[in-house]
Image (tube, rainbow, N blue to C red; front, side, top):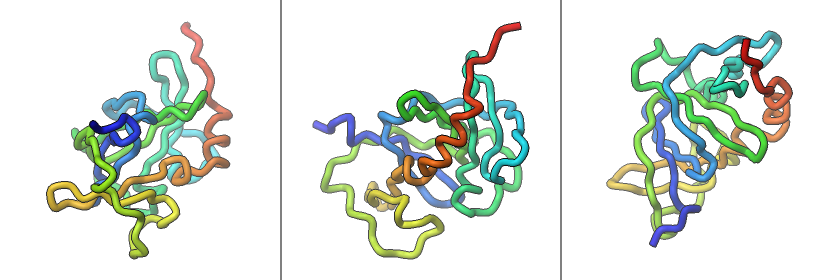
Length: 159
C-alpha cells in the first residue's frame, strides 16, 4: 500500500516533469486574474481572490529562472498549496496526474546539472521511462519569501 506521504501531484514546466507532495496541495484551478503588487520580485505575479481569501501567486518558471512562456494556454494551471496558515498559488504549464510512488521508485537527488538548484530537489522518480523531479517546495520557495508573501494575505471583504 502506498502511504499518503508518497502521493504526489505531477506537473510540467517547459519539457521537464516535477512533483510536489499531495498533502501540500489544496486544489488546482484554471488561471485567473492576478493583481500585480509593486516592488516585488519578477516571479511574484501578484495576488488573487479565491473565494474571499487573498492568495499570493508566483510563476514557477520565473522562480526557477526558466524562459517565460510565450503565451498563456488552456492547459496552464495554478496549484494552490497550503503551508499551515499560509496558502499560495504557483503557476505551472500543465498538471499531469496524481501519482502514488513506492520508496524504491524514488532515488536520492543526484549530483547533476539542472535548471533549478539541487537544494530544491528531494529525489528523482522513475515512472514509465520518464524522470520526475520531486521538489522540496518549501525550500524552493524559501521561508523568507513565504513570510513576504504572507503579509498581503488577508480575507477579502464582500462589497
